[in-house]
Length: 608
Image (cartoon, rainbow, N blue to C red):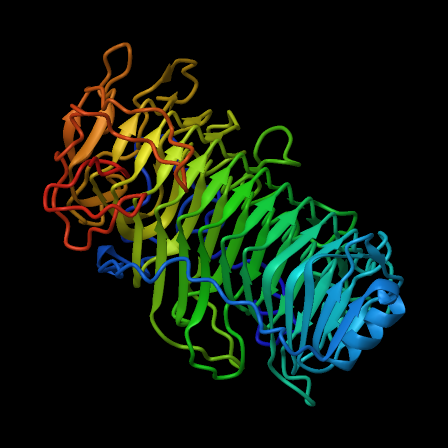
């Protein structure tokens, strides 16, 4: 893909699809790769070698502190204050390019710019909550090179346009990142003169901004991801965003934000109506991350700090990606001291199905992860950035509602998580779907897991649908602990070519607690405390229900509580799910933050 997928940031590498047999279907629910064959390709269609076994699951990590945002910078003693007659491009440009703390109070009309401002020193731009910078549909607004730190607070940017790279012969492997970013580009790599810096945004709004298109190096034909980040592109920088609003932005990768090798924290932010779409270039790395796209987490040669990607307390709605990650795509390398934390977010009505038409092609990654798509490269490491350390992976207390993918994981699709302290718990999956009727591969109306070794605990799956396989959860190569999950009316076909749909298609593999290397299905270990309703088809065929504590009972769910954030689906008094779960060593709180006791309820909600 882009720079960090290589031994140099100048030589991109194709997405690390490590499978050698992309045509090996895992979709019929009757067999599949053994748990010891866990290296999975990005296609959702099988595995390769025996690089992992059921010992690849580490204990779940404790839940980290949640939703801690950032404070705005002190503007009580600004370097420059701009108001009244100075609310024009020339005055603002002069102040911003000189650096320092600039307070702009221009409420009467957007200030339209004709070219970008260049940040050469530490700069704070405060828009007083009323100022709008407008690119007029012709220019990017802000460019920051390596070295300084940029703060954007209480400011709106709109109608920005990144430069067009397609057809520009001056774009090469050495400078392509100068073309990325529709409204703001920040760079922190070592350019032999400076290194470091970051972008910090507080109460920042960015709307209706877009990049140019992708291109290729005119001499080497190397793909260059110049169309990345409809609003923001962060190249090797720290990027923190708190209380921000990204709406209706457009790019080829990362409709609102794209990063390469960044440390990222996004809290209390809305990302609505952004798009990552195919463009006119023949660059084949397109259509990932309707809101957010990240390629790699390494940030500097030999740097050994934690490489964190934290999303907490955010609202993601109506975002679209043509290929994968309707809201978010994250690619990182295993064992690079990466911590991914996705907590207390709402994902609603996001789609990874925009440009796909007709049957799914064998080996294609089109249409995966309606909200979230995560792919971990288990084989590649970068010589110049030998970040080494244990990884953690947390997807906890989120609501995935009414998202769709063409092919795999209507709510989320996750690949290759092992030798990692991981937890996927207390999430709500309601009304998500997989759209294709092609049964050659894929599935998982709520969730698709390929090459996963971690506990799946205390989640609720209700009314998810897959037109191919597995209405609730589709499991590929790997092995999970399945505990205290509530499955209700998850619909899919039960066999290839059978037009009948069953609401008992909660999960595709039966319980197999013997990792004997035989092809007996997906390994589900230490299961218990799950509720399945119904547990058989309407025509009387039993369906997989591993670790069942409750079968065929109405769990007595209330209506979706939209006043809670994220929304919660409560258990009503008398529910058979109350106190019916099994005690777990690392049980976290429910979706609302309610603590659990040694008699936990089944599902993401703990009744009072």
